[in-house]
Image (cartoon, rainbow, N blue to C red; front, side, top):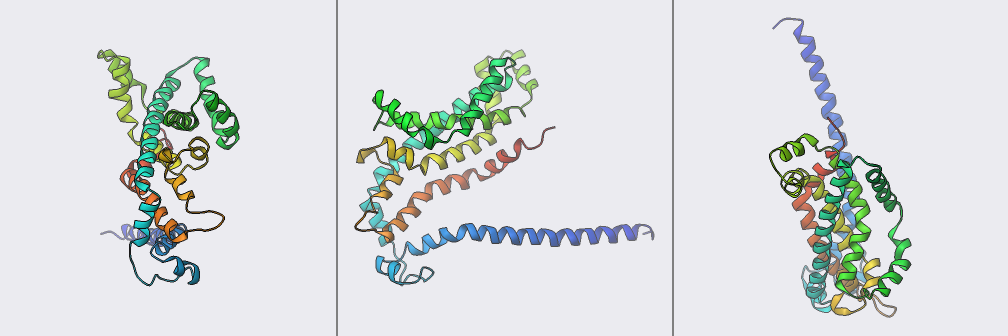
Length: 291
């Protein structure tokens, strides 16, 4: 080994050491931030095993006297969570599937269109993101009530679709611009129709951004309370979030059962995120760099 190569290796080693310490510092900071956001959830898990007396009399950070699933059983029976979970799952799955399909088709048309109408459509959906759904509650209720859609499954699903299209189309249009047009042109030369080109060529390429859209919309719809409370008025159609409301009143608050119900309500959406987290991260970074 020559003498001229040693200083280069030493400098490279020093560079690797500095990089290692900086990476360790960032990882330590990330761990601290993660614990900061995870701490309230850990407190809910801890308190879900406490009795009502322990929850009110003991310090918030104290451990329960015994670990049992009494609160979880009470929450499932008292809130009739079997029906509430079925309703929430039905609303979420149907609305998210339709949102993902409609947004992808519309984004494909906007991204590939070259006329002024397509550019105006993109601006139109972008403006829709700037309008909060809370500001639309009164006109939506009046419109839905005039069509008899209040307290119906179709009315709630249509509401979720209409309020989720703007963000979904904007998200998918940005990702669609990263898909090469040459692939679609080659498929058309081979004789593929427009429908086959979309479902066989375009749709598989957008698996990552669609996973991102599915997770974001699932979070929003599953945890929604305001729009659901506005549209659903009967007990057989209520969702998990509406069922949780029954535990709190002006005379009594069942916090112990509520803690267990919150954990049960959050479990399906956590499972969904864990199952699609790789595609979610890939979809969030897919359109960051072109070329």
